[in-house]
Length: 373
Ligand code: AMP
Image (cartoon, rainbow, N blue to C red; front, top):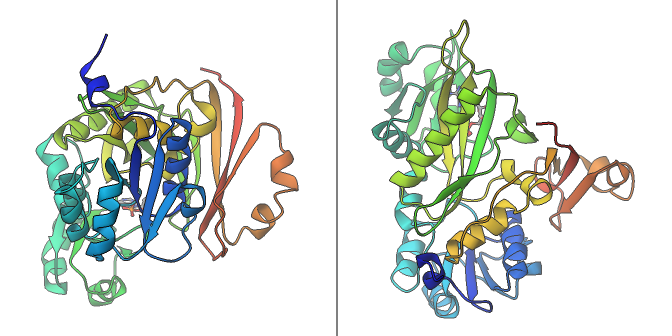
């Protein structure tokens, strides 16, 4: 039977445009190829590992309207692998070709304040927060928010960049200077038990499915490992799913997204607290293990959603731990002929980046084990 999803679906050979040429774009392009699609990756010139695996690419600035026009004419749908794409670029494209997820999604999730306001409006819990634009604003809000608290730039923050913790006795002017004196958010510090994320997909008809929840460990603000299943209660994971459904529905989202969450399990029979940290409107590093541990990867699921195909069952057949391989882990990464590749059930994914800078994500490795529950 023909469903609505089928009617909207792209046919094999259709062209999927991807904005952004990093590892997420690369893995999206590989997944798209597996489904018979052609990918055209658009990114500014530089080290773009996605170019190596896509049928076509354009190396041009996001402001180059002639290049964007040619790109729009070549593709059937546009998606993106990172959220900091200039508004004008998407506004230009959306008049010419479907953009999934939609432009409103980026406008909201690029700004930590509008993202949190949207979450609160839809009944999703977040840390106490305030918008602050000056040292005076911070002075006015800090007693209500309490110390320690976290000061983050409203826009363009990632992997802990553009944020600082304010503790008792810290000089507020110095903290504001540390984040570049930019419009910011002041958040209460959450003494969580565990950081987890929910990686889920919504299709063009509003159907939502989620992968099992990984627990995430960061080192130096960069994701180090994601482990499934997470060591959280059923109540906490149900709450995480409710949050994903509320947010994806509110945003009329199409594609894969991740919600980073702080979990505090309830003590003495109390309910667990699950607070939203942030939304990633794209495939996410904490979902990479799905490539090896599930019947469908987050990358294929995203391509299915943006192409109007039915979502696949995100069943997880194995337990998994995903390790990020960073630039400075030379011994791990460069000597891959050695230790890591030979470990039992270790699945290696390298991004083909030219230069291994400190903290740069060069690849990941997912170790599978028999599913216990
Ligand atoms: P973010 O850039 O917002 O994802 O923050 C990076 C990391 O800083 C998070 O993964 C947490 O480990 C930590 N962090 C951020 N905000 C808070 C908060 N309000 N309370 C406690 N830890 C936080």
